[in-house]
Image 1: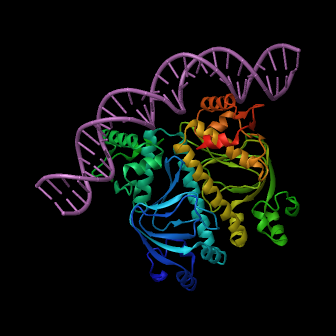
Image 2: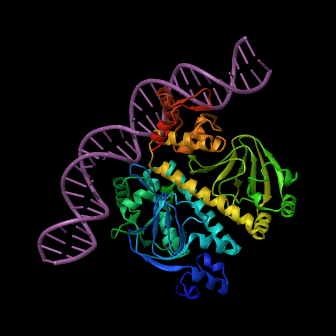
Image 3: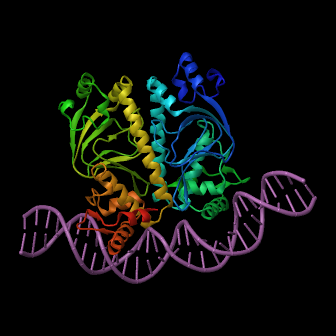
Length: 228
Length: 228
DNA sequence: CGGCTTCATTGACCCTGATCAAAAAGGCCG
DNA sequence: CGGCCTTTTTGATCAGGGTCAATGAAGCCG
């Protein structure tokens, strides 16, 4: 694998916990992998033999019912970790929604390495706790919020995650990595309801929609009010 | 604190990773605490200065909107761990829904201890990964399932968690630790819809409801079919 | 045992968001 | 630039589940 020391995620992914010599060991185990938009890495219910760091691109975690209804249960950005350490099958599938670059490991090898590197494991624990918090806040949205509250909450969350650190309070425009159907799958709505809510928010002057995937927030306070 | 060595959770909670001498250290830090039904230990948004193992009883994790709608985002059973290691405020409140007994620690002290005990941290990581999987499966339910699918899924999940290991496929009756309103808060429904669905399932012969909180599953296959 | 309180059930009605259908707008490639 | 395919928007209708209201059943305690 290309040298971990020069990796763009060197200081952001869980590898940040490692010393140069440990990093060398890890780099021997991993390999870089490009995946194209739409490609599914891991299938729901299958054994998940790989774990990975995301270097570039965006992926979705999708759970589905037997008859094909889908719910996006997680969104994975660069520096995030994917896969299921400790040998369980993946309870959701993982698909790239843009071209992505990963740094993958065999799960068993990774588990073994992690067991010998408590700092790495602690970083992973911190990340997992953060993901759990996020998932639980999303449960409130899915179970108790109206369509307009859902869409407003979504835009705020995206502003927070997509805008450079700290800029969420001031900067206003960003490009979503999702189409309308995917937004609907995140919010537990249909594509039609999602589209209508966005159109209404534009008509009310809260946002602009300069292109299909671009959003500009005009009235952050009103959006927060609306998110409940 | 009462001796960890004789603790009923000795081999089931995260402490199972520790040797007797380590356990002695831990027991000096912790203390037993009884909480009565309805008591709230941690408030949403507040700093959460304690973490704990649950020895007995059931607790709920609740997220709420500003105007008071509530969603239960987690259910905590004996041997489970509660609280938020690594110094973040709790994103949900934690309340006892039955009389409970906990083994509590100051968060900072616990964090420090955990940092020196990789096996403990690994146990915690495993648990957290499991909780995250459970939360994500619940997101599919909240976002995409109908009321009848929700109630059927709930009964199956409860049978799985409340019946002794492995008995879920054969044993049929159990006592829920929840009232109707709490079931509604778990499923993202109203109490009325929840009640109607249960009544209908009884009328259809899928279940019996011998008392307020008791459930007997008559037709497991049909219930699974219904859960989707 | 009986009254009080809390919890659960049932009923009538309505509204939000789903569904079905069609048109419009973008994107892509020759 | 023009045609084709995909994505999004818009419209009309419908139904699942919410809301409001009343009744019924259980638990509790004097």
